[in-house]
Image (cartoon, rainbow, N blue to C red):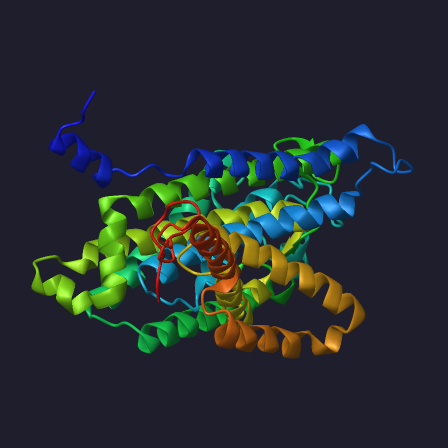
Length: 396
């Protein structure tokens, strides 16, 4: 049956999220990533197939970082908005969930009080008003979404309405994050000061340190990472995604043809902040602590390096970059801890000079070169740099 021109245009307007081959590859990767907690539960510690609880927690932490990198790629890779403040949204989501986890300790703290130990130590007599209802998980989950989302919306509205962009926007987001970190370091804010929240006991009534609970948290994190990847892909493949790409490439030209970028930028900025907050909320119960150090500007800059290393504007790349860089960090800090920051800076310089499109860009170039060699051997025209998955390349 021959398709009409209108049907052809509709198909072009709504491209598939991924090719069938890509869906199969993603399913296989998800299946492999789901195995570590299962191997941890199914086999005893002496078995060669056993994976330690430390490795399970470490991989879970990496997936939280990957989700944060994915969120940053939405605004930087597709809308051209370089944020140096996503560590703030990550930490706010962690604190929102941490408030519930602290309330869930109950009387099992050191002082056996209704209040968290840090409040008893600082001579607090009752919870401050903003701790109200945080003993309920549903309310904490709502805060995980609303607190980063509302802050991002308000900040983004005034920044984008004032047409602040480029390096000026990056500096403002960095200043916002630093100011929030100084605020949370204060003991009178009710967030534990420099020690933050720690010593969690349970979540939804389950022992937070048990292998079963950690496995559940791991799988939930994997599910959120996969779901957010599909969501981000659907956004970038839609008409909205095309407008965001136009914002990145030439915002003034977009205004000239009649589009107002404010709403588009505000939407993707707020969505990115919410995703980052969810990553922080999933991070806290698996790592066991949240403190103002997570808001440091260094953490936000590290997120940028994850995205650049993997390949910005690719979605898959930042996930890969977060895993690679943090894997190197885990090894490097255990062998040469004092030299890690130098190594991180070197990674960023090398990626900028030799891998401007990141690891995913390198893989695509190698695949395209291989396809061209095969085409020449068969006497057919070269592919002109087409991606192996049939997708349009995202350029700088």
